[in-house]
Image 1 (cartoon, rainbow, N blue to C red):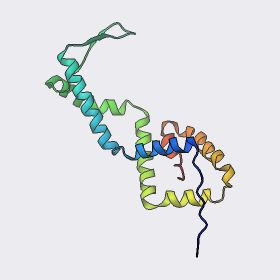
Image 2 (image 1 turned 120 degrees about the horizontal axis):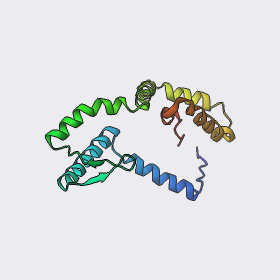
Image 3 (image 1 turned 180 degrees about the horizontal axis):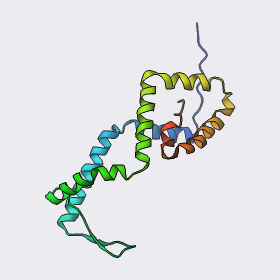
Image 4 (image 1 turned 90 degrees about the vertical axis):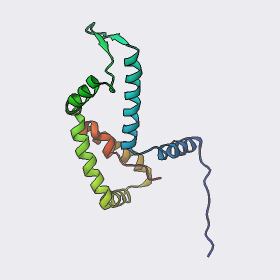
Length: 154
């Protein structure tokens, strides 16, 4: 049996999006990115701490100095402020819970089945409108909207 395969010529936007996707697929895991960025921040704090960089806080006028992570005071500051840094960031709890829930649903295959079931009933013309609708509704979930926006079918 011979199959009639036609290849569509990709538009410029499709080529750009494909290039972005290939680049994003080469990124390391979020944990590795966090470790790399933390190490970069620690090294920059070391360099700026050794050069005694000081800045004036624009609203209070106080002089702010760099906390070097590689000193005793820096380690103590980091460890004692770690919990308040995470708890002080309000959207983190919601995003963590949503991420765990979505991760569990994705690992069990429920997300794929749900998306295929729902999106198979939507005419192709309305798919962009449906994605926009889901994104707008996702705004109700505050900062965790990025977690629930459906991925591209490509």
